[in-house]
Amino acid sequence: MTQSKRVAVALGLGAGILALGAAQATLGAADRQLVQAPRFEVDPVWPKPLPNHWILGSVIGVGIDSRDHVFIIHRGDSTLNQRTEAGAKANPPIGECCASAPPILEFDAEGTLIKAWGGPGVGYEWPTSNHGITVDDKDNVWIGGNGAADSHILKFTHDGKFLQQIGKPGQAPNSNDSTHFGRVAKISFDIKAQEAFVADGYGNKRIAVLDMGTGALKRYWGAYGGRPDDTRLPPYDPSAPLIKQFRNPVHCAEPTTDGLVYVCDRPNDRIQVFKKDGSFVKEVRIAPLTRGDGSVWDIAFSRDAAQKYLYLADGKNERVYVMDRQSLEILTSFGDGGRQPGQFFAVHSIATDSKGNIYTTETYEGKRLQKFAYKGLGSVTRANQGVLWPKNP
Image (cartoon, rainbow, N blue to C red; front, side, top):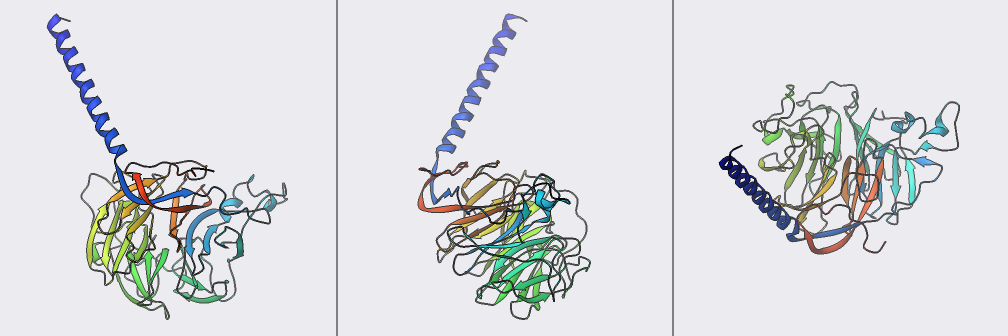
């Protein structure tokens, strides 16, 4: 190498180092930037241990009742396939522990199990793969199902008495069907209008709005407020133009007190916002390079009158985003992958209670319910906060 070439290489290397240093300094400054937002800490001892050697399967729904009792729904059968996890249910049993808990569990605000119920019964057809749980203004409990044959919705009293089945199982997906559903992910409510908003879901590609009393379909729509289309879509490509249809699953549809509906278009990595009549308002992409399961799993709102903050569960990137609901700006986020309190594996569902606390559930091998205690508004970093461990555990 000639002297001139060596000088050129040295200059180029020096410039590269300077550029890298500048980029790192910029990134460091962004990491240190502070913003006012709700603050949380994980409660590492909530909920209390379950009785009867019970364990949870994949926990795929969480809802809050009028007393701040926390309801979850899980798939206990996901434990039965684990020989060492459900030894008491092996044939013959291989040990005292363990057995799956009933599908629906109710905890009080202190984390004590109050009641457990659910599963097949007289007068209704339990989903082959239950999914989502929400509690309405009368404290009735609604669930869907995302199994291949699950084209219906079930409604129970607070204590598990069957009230209503909407739709019949075994129907083929059809996003323009007026009487059945296509593997419902979750049901949410506009209490003032007495309407149920159905994220419909894993087979269909639509939001369906029902009369909460009769279960009759009132209206429905697809992405951008258009007519839903069940045409098979190519795999998600972050670099491709945004498609005009929802992808499966449409995972949540959360109405607000100011007349909007926030929809989880999960594998498209986007939130779409509508008026309650289905008119499209706006959208935002979240972690748009996320493939596979997608980044937009479930939404809950802060409990102030204006519902100022939106909390978004991202089960692929293992975090919860804290967002300004109106602008859809991400203020901060928290969480990391792992098994310890405050970490996540496939954080699937999210809900808030009247005190502002956040509850999350985890699916797949996560199989867990966690509580993040609200600590008031304060300064937090815009960067991911990581694990929100208590300051004085």
